[in-house]
Every structure is written in structure tokens, then in C-alpha cells.
Image (cartoon, rainbow, N blue to C red):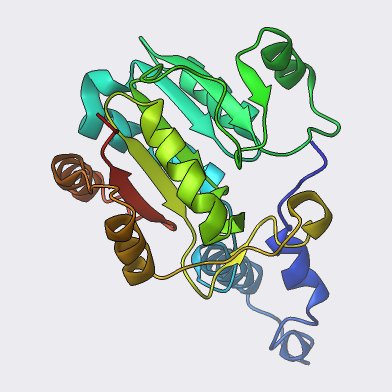
Length: 248
């Protein structure tokens, strides 16, 4: 696809020379450990960049990391999943590899330069391109679980008021929302022509207040199970994760 996350490794190279490199050219013989040490330091810096709040964040990738935790928390509710968000073909493909899991996807934006696998998913109707500011093209409770990533950050409250209840409508057992933290940069931020507006990364307190004001109930049981499963696997989400009950 044409939407690609920024390559942090390239930034590290382009950012200038590595400190202490000049000292390597001393009259005395350099230590054979020096290249190994420099490589290790570079790896640490790269990992830190990827997971720091100042790096580019893709909650779509975070969903894929979280799948084992979600399966533990939701159990049978992972049997029929709808993913909503950019690059949904990647998430759907990953879900379809899971045992006893059916998966569908909604791509909120036009697909450009997609691979053969994504074209196949679209052709089969497994992935649809649809503007999520309007009603989703599914009946109520069509899916056991709806997972959302990198989508709600680009919606104003006006459209959130329509979109989130729609996601709760088409789910039977709940909605899981992956959204960025304030201070993070979305991996999609440079593509304003695609999204129409920059991402608005809101605080946890903003979201909690929003859910209450719009009668979207927190799924406390799922939240607790998710947190317990995450702790056992030493999993720390790079995105905010909210668990919302379905509309009954």
C-alpha cells in the first residue's frame, strides 16, 4: 500500500554522525569490541524510538501485537470479528490465520497500490471500503466483536456520536478501541490528503467523559480480563485500549 510508516532507522542515520566516532581513529589500536558496542547502542536507541511517545505510532500494528491477549480476554467472542481502520487488510489477514476465527474489515479510506492479497479480500467482500461517518453496511449484532484502530482519532465529536454507536450496534459482545495517546505522532499524520484532517489524540479522561455522555458503557469485565492477560504476558500497549459494551 502507499501508506507506509516512517522508517526510524533512516532517521537515526540522517540525524548526523554517531557520537564518539572520531575517537575510534586514534593512534592506538581500536578495541575489537567497539563495533559490537556501537551496534548494541544503535539497537537500543532504535527500540526506544519505536516505543517512545515521540515516535510514530500505528495502533493497527498494536492490534496485531495484542491478539493473544484479546483471545485470552474475550475467548469465544473472538470467533467472528470485524476490524475497522486503515490498512485493515493486514489485520484481517492476521485474524484469519487464527484458529476458529472469522474476520471481516472496513477500510475508511480509498485503497491505493494494494497487494494481491488485499485485492482478493476486497473482491470476496471480506474487506469493504466505506465511509465510517455513515451507517455501517451490516445488520445489528452481525459480529461478536468489533475492533477499531487508527480511525476514531480522525473523527470530530460530531461524527464520533454517529460512528461509535454504529460499531456498538453491529457487535454482539463488545467493541475494543485502540487509539493514540496525546503527545504521540500518528503513523498516518503526513497523509492529510487521505484523512482530510490531522489526528486528534485525546486523553483517557476525555474518552471516559465522552463515553459517559453518549451512553456508551464501559465493559468492566472485559477490561479486567484484558489487563490480567496483559500482565501475565508482560504486554504493555503502546496505544490506549478501551472496552465498550454492545448496544442491546
